[in-house]
Amino acid sequence: MKTSKSSYSNDAEGGDCIEVTPRPQAIHIRDSKRTGAPGLPLPESAWSAFVTYAAASLTA
Image 1 (cartoon, rainbow, N blue to C red):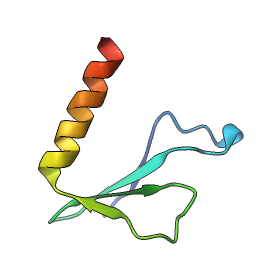
Image 2: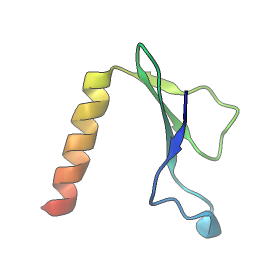
Image 3: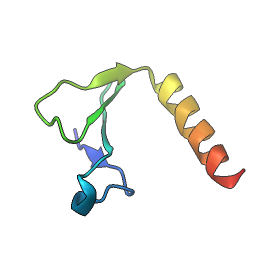
Image 4: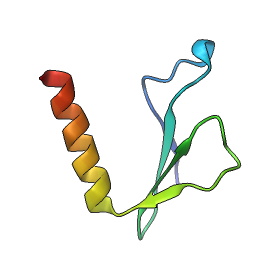
């Protein structure tokens, strides 16, 4: 599975962001600075709700 890094990540400032890896049963997220750490599995519905909330917050 392909891992995606946040487009807001800035390696010059420490690379503070998350990585997202879709899997068949869940969406796994992790801190990009802890590449050896396991991902936190979230149901697709929870990830979708978070993304919708975050997008709405940017336009509010």
